[in-house]
Amino acid sequence: MARQQVRQQALRGRKRVSAESGAVAAEVVLNAAVEMFAAQGFHGTSMRDIAARAGTSVSHAYYYFPSKTHILVGIMTRVTEDLIAALLAARGSTVDKPAMRLAAIVRAHVRFHIERQAESFVGNSELRSLGPEDRARVVALRDRVSRIFKEVIATGFATGVFRGVHQPEATRAIISMCTAVAGWYRPNGPDRPETIENRYADLALQILGYRHDD
Amino acid sequence: MARQQVRQQALRGRKRVSAESGAVAAEVVLNAAVEMFAAQGFHGTSMRDIAARAGTSVSHAYYYFPSKTHILVGIMTRVTEDLIAALLAARGSTVDKPAMRLAAIVRAHVRFHIERQAESFVGNSELRSLGPEDRARVVALRDRVSRIFKEVIATGFATGVFRGVHQPEATRAIISMCTAVAGWYRPNGPDRPETIENRYADLALQILGYRHDD
Image 1 (cartoon, one colour):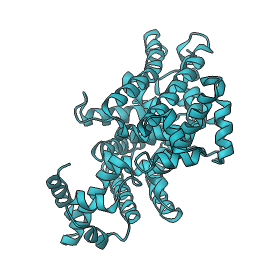
Image 2 (image 1 turned 120 degrees about the horizontal axis):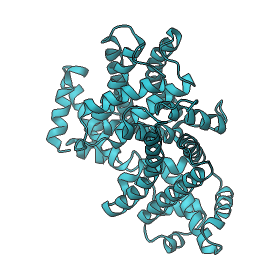
Image 3 (image 1 turned 120 degrees about the vertical axis):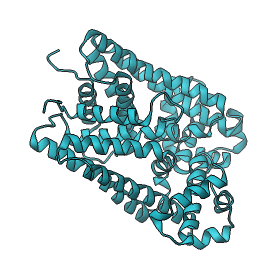
Image 4 (image 1 turned 180 degrees about the horizontal axis):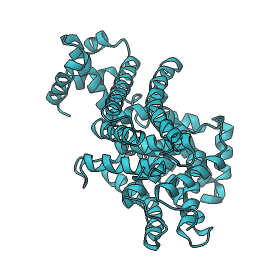
């Protein structure tokens, strides 16, 4: 991605973080690091690489993040918190029926992984690079993602509209197949994001034994 | 993994490759590289790291593999060929009924990803590190994995025992959810591999609208 695009992307993200320019600069560093980690991995990337990609100095990058690990934690925290926000918004956008809610969060999860492929890749491939404490924090945040799915699915089982086998494993399988979209989706592929989202909503409902006459 | 274990693992693999000690030595290098790439990534690992882990010299490692890229291609080729062999063996082990065959290949795919987690991780995270030609070769090999699933599923649709929506997407979703097991399985987790395999076979059949009275 060209430096100009990185800056524009950070500017678009400004409202989400803060109106201060410091927050924008920190976002520019995070976005540059996402690209570098996605291309070369955490261990294959130096602070110098990240600063160069961000169009800034190494000391400026260190001003915002005391270490490369802090940048990785920042990437993982940001992407997971944004995913949680997207799922909660989707869940709240439908009437309180498990099938509607599940379809909504599946569509949101797939859309998110289509839109944020590089961050998803870094999030899934570099958990190994965190120490025990940071890792535990990120895993706890991810557990909140799982919990959103679990709760909607549990309600569907409780009310009898979902009747598939292996409820916890089905939940994990649904999250896995929707997350995997980040690995294969290509913008120049044959299907539009909406089409893919809708298919995954149908497939998830099918795993859960949902019948459309329910 | 201790060096002794690496050697034992290579010795166990001897029959698969060749009876010659050169093949064993090459396997020892490959296995050491799997561990290093899984821990630090391809770009974060040097030939020196790999040789040290394999308990050999850098020149000896270069004797078997002209470059680090050759090692990565070797890892990806070996793991994918072994997966294909496991799937074909599973497919051939049942009567010629799509539901039986699908259950068999799903179980084999899950088992393989439980047993070879590190190689699966490297295979999925380091495709980025291959040049266009090597990448195309590995992708072509992986397409053979997909094709095994596609053919069994297509037969089930043709004979009417599978009736789910979105046949190609369902195929990809099934492969994705079974592959994802490599990412979360822990040997000290609550479920035995057999239990997990059987659940994924049930879930795959459920995605495909299979009814056990068929």
